[in-house]
Amino acid sequence: MKKIDALHRGEPLMDLKAMESKERGRVDIINLSLSARIIINVEALNMAESVGNYTRHRKAPVVIRTETGYSIVYVPVMSAEALANAYQRLLAQIASARGLPVTKMDLEGYFMKFSDNNIIKAYYIDDLAKILNISNKDPNSLIEALKNKRPGEVEKLILKSSVVADVGGFLYTDMLLKRTSAIRFAYLTPAIDAVEAGAASVSPQMHVRYTPEAREREQAIYYLEGGSSLYVLTAQLLVSDIGRTFYTPEPDKDLEAQRPRRIDAAIDALIALADGLLFGAKRSRYMPQWLVRSMAVSVSKGIVEFNVSPGVTSDYIARTCERASHLADSITDLEIDIYAFSEETSDVEKCINYENQSNKRMRFKEADSHTEALALAKKKIHEYLGSTAKREGSGR
Image 1 (cartoon, rainbow, N blue to C red):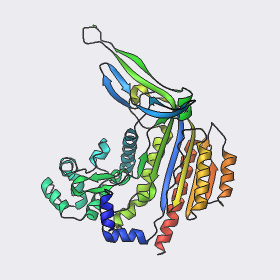
Image 2: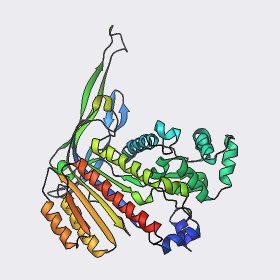
Image 3: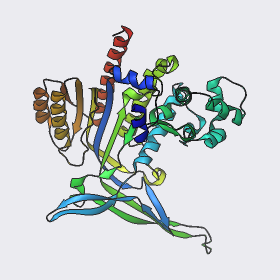
Image 4: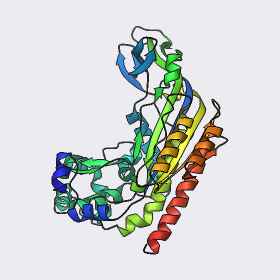
């Protein structure tokens, strides 16, 4: 019955033994979540299309409240796919530097991630042959070898080949093998209060290509649309999913041995991306001017995951603390730590009051900078992972 339910939901079919194992035993979910409000001026981080000599910034509709109700406004945005691409590039770079497995395609920034047999034969034969420890790199032979393996075995092969596929997820369509991404991003959008105040805009800038003789078709005038606003960056990293298999209940000793380093690389890639805005296009000539106005970072551990409230309004830190307090008070086997930095509002007293209301199952700490908030969150995750390793090692 459970297999039929999973099929109806369009989910990949796990071994029944694995499903029962996950239902019987409690697995603590460790989740890292962040949202930040960042002034970004004169950026071309995500261009959507070219029409003639005009290159447009990506835009999307957002709903704002007006005196008469609600209205749709089109604003400059950056897609979550672009953010995920930048994150996976950072992850591949960090993982490779630390001796963790990544594919050649990962390092080159092509994240096809074993999507089907044709892609595997064209781009991933060397990576799989290395993991299988075989010298025969005949594409058809390797595909036949994959067909003869159970889904759980293929999942392990892919995870052992690529930390990026582990953290960023993959879909191997020829075996209906799916791994949901542990890293999740929202679109980078202007804050609602910024849009309501009119502080979100795109404008075309004229550029000219000159040539010495100014011959016909040599010189060119072109326009590039840039955006400026108070943007909201929101992301989530489901830490406890990294290095874990989902199609088989038996842990793999090699993956388990690498798991702390894989988690470290995944967290550091997110910290690098969020701390220095290491994402987006056109950075060689359109590097944006930016200033982090506030950031909230949460680390939760328990039977459900907790995410911070998106920073669409300036009171999001207080809203996050309020939600965390009530949730931790209601779900007693859940712990939430929140680290926040703000140059906009002071929500410290509110958050401390909410902390006390939750009997300190929700804990709050004010940070001196957005960088410190990220560092404190990483330290807390290491504490949780250390306690988990001790518990598992003792057989409890």
